Image (cartoon, rainbow, N blue to C red; front, side):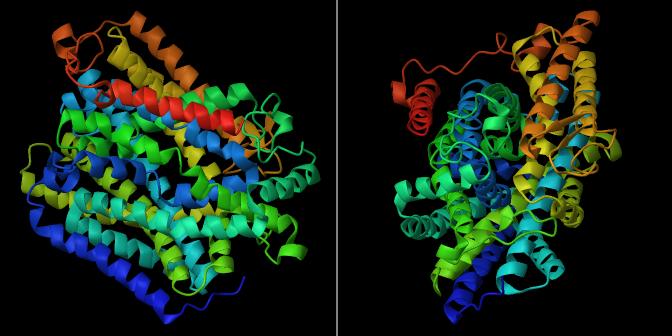
Length: 571
């Protein structure tokens, strides 16, 4: 696709956004007086802002580009990342886990692990999580560079570095608070930029009924049943019956339980937003507030991908086609950029590009702020230079931001090996979040879990993920970053199916090993030490005087009911 010519109005829209982003950081710079202000926002964020930031922290390039790519590659089964793979876990973290996080006054997820278990468990998680944030930030940078190269004809390498510098500036100036308020801005930009795209694409495809008919040709042309791209559950009876190559157990266990709960309940990137809320009640409402718009986002980010592959399959009739990669496969990551260039006129194109850039930079900023907090508090302060002044740690936090951005640039080039960045992202989560969730589940709800058991479980779970990935390959892939580097003893129909089962093996190994080793070792923590950290030893917030719709449990049930309805409608 040739570069698109932007009109003057498009440049005005883009310029206004960049000025606003940097202006927020500049405005907040004087309030960053302590390390807590810079790294934790001083726990002063209102619930509705924290809720939108909680949602938007997961609304970076990985979701906007990756979910559209998955919509094109796998169809509406991608909605499971929301209605099965997000909503239940968001309700769970709000009702059950946030009292422990917020009430313990831990500054990070690794610090909670130190309080609950011991120093070595915190250290292992801090290093693995810091590595994950770098990969995740790099994915956003890669998507940004790909967008600017394809749509505007800019050099890919220059695009990556320009986006890195902008993000670096507003985080160094305003810290986590700057990132949070920019995430709220990004949420509204994505809604405004993508609603017209979905409307125009659906109109061109003949509405939902016309899209179903077009996608039936996509499905039957690849040997699947006609509804494989438009039915979410009907074709999960067998892995060979759907393009994702996953049966219902792999979907429910791998995505709906392990990866979903592992991400939303233990990933400091999103938990950090709730911990920045101004009260315990606000912190508990944060994920529940975020869950309502979250369940509607498939209509904004998955539908464009489904429309793109439907139009591509009949390119002679529609004049629209996704580009192909050197290996002959479609470049699914280009679904959203191609749709923007195809449908949007001047002015609206500027708004659409601004929404994409906002999501990319928000994804980078969210991961970099999580990285600098974990590095500063859980690695540097604990192991490198303990006992220094708060001013020193504030300086380290800012310096770490620079290092995190530079490392993310390197990770951006690894993402070029995947035709769907969501495949890459879920692989990273399978290594880090899947075993970590087993540790948290046992740590919060089983007082007998010991530090030795937690540490060994985390290590063995991560090794199990590495072993499974190293011994398996997705269809059509060569041994290397996609697996098989220990010898391909097994094969999966897709990268996503491999990721789900990698996560299952990692979680199961960690869960079993933690129990076994905990039973064989002595619990070093007394009940008094565990108070506020373990369910059953922690007094829960008193909510009996509140109306049911103001209680987290009541809100959670309402959210779950809405998710069930959506699953039934698109069964």
